[in-house]
Structure formats: C-alpha cells, structure tokens
Length: 238
Image (tube, rainbow, N blue to C red; front, side):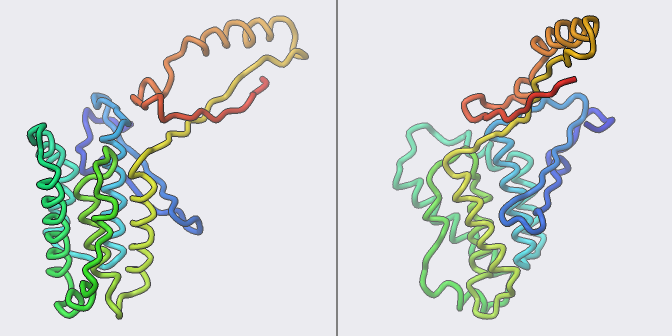
C-alpha cells in the first residue's frame, strides 16, 4: 500500500522475470488506501498483459503505437469493448474477428520492424493466436496480439536470441493460464509452547488463537476466488 488515495492502472504493477528460474515472474501490485482490491480474473488478465508487454520489449519491439495499445488495455478499453458485445454473437463472426485481430497484430509488428523481417517470418501462415484464442477470462485480446507480434519478430532468420526466448516464454505463459489459474496462499498455524507456563498457554493458546480464528482472511480482503485457491502452511510453536 502507498500513502495516496488511488493508484492508476498503468502504475499499479511492477513485473520482472526471476533470474535462473524459467517462466517465473515476480509481480508487485501497488494500491492506494481507497483502492478496492480484487484479485479475480480481471487482475490476472492485467498481470498477463503486463508480462506480455515486457516480453514484447525483450523481443525488441518498440513504438508509440505499442505503448498506447498497452495503456489502453490497462485502462479497460479492451474489456469495455467486449462488455458492449451482444449476447447472441455469431461464432463464425467471432472467429473472423480473432483472425482480423491477429492480422492487425502482425501489421503492427511489421511497422515496428524492417519490411524484410515481416516477409520472411509470415511465409508459412501459421499463427499461435489461432491455437489459444478460445475465450478465457485470463487472456485478453491484447495478450494474444502481443504474442502474435513477438512471433513475427522471432521467426526471422536473423532474429536475436532474446526474441526467440521471449516467444518461448510468451507461449508457455499463455498456454498455462488459458484454462485455469491457481492461487497459492501461505498460512501459519500457531500453538503455545507448553514449557512456557500456564499464563503463556492461556494468552497464546486461548486468546491469541481465538483472535486468529476470527481474523479477516487475506483471501477475503483480496477477493480471491475460493475455487482456485490452495493454502500452504506450517505449524508455528511460540
């Protein structure tokens, strides 16, 4: 928490990859004291989009359009547009829209890279976007487009190693979160050390544990979906 009322979505997340541990990321979420914390699907989607944006930069993609697309995503533009869609969408039309989005992503990548790069990388017409573009609350259209842009760069014969690494990391991430996300929460179970005496046992074993039982759980404060949560803990004797 920071000593200010609210944190804008663009400033909320700090993300970095963990050195020496493939496909692991450290994410710090910053909140103001008036922010409502909700770590449900929308939060996960924001985390995934932020990681994909970092991988775009790792692949060597640069440009004002890329940054604007990312800011628009964090500010809710993509989700708002999806909320406005009619409920009786035609599946064929959705497939066409996904293909159009993939083409747009490839076009953006082409604008950010030499023209010969685009020509050499799109020869087979294959697209990872079509492989994982089924509806998922955790994978936004921005994330799929970012994957396509990274793919365009990485498939060039002269692509740097950082671009191929970014593509592998992006594919692994989206394949993992496309269907389900699991939250792991640490928890300690306390008990009194009997050798400390009766008063200590009463204070720690009775009073403290009673307060611990009725305390507001982090999963409630952060709005974590219980169906996706696994608690990991240990016994702590004090």
